[in-house]
Image: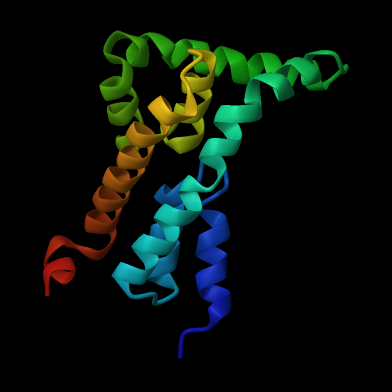
Amino acid sequence: MLSLKNYLWVFFLSMVPVLELRAAIPIGATLGLEWVANYLICVIGNMIPVPIILLFVRHVLEWMKKIPRLDKIALWVENKAQKNTPKVQKYASLGLLIFVALPLPGTGAWTGSLIAAMLDMRVREAFPPIALGVVTAGIIVAVVTYGAASLLF
């Protein structure tokens, strides 16, 4: 019997930066979650922080720069975003989609949202490619985790 606790665990884990659904889907599989429910819960969880990041991250980083010790973290986050900005900027929305869709370390909804915010993209132009990227990354991770055959049958 699967408990609500397992579903909540992967839901909240998929919201965590760096881990996101790339870690939550495999963990959900090890907890015995059925792939469709696991996939949907992780995609939804991964998308919840996106509009918040797009709307507020620049203000938060500016505030952090004024506080000793937090200023180093803010600069690190900005540098990480700036490092990946040329990859995204070259192709705008398509670049953002591809960047988020690749389930590699340092990519994902959090970093994609941060890059979009640094590029001054509006929520309505950044959210769709990020969402499609999360959906795509989730499919890739689910196929790798559960195997293509188990997803079809």
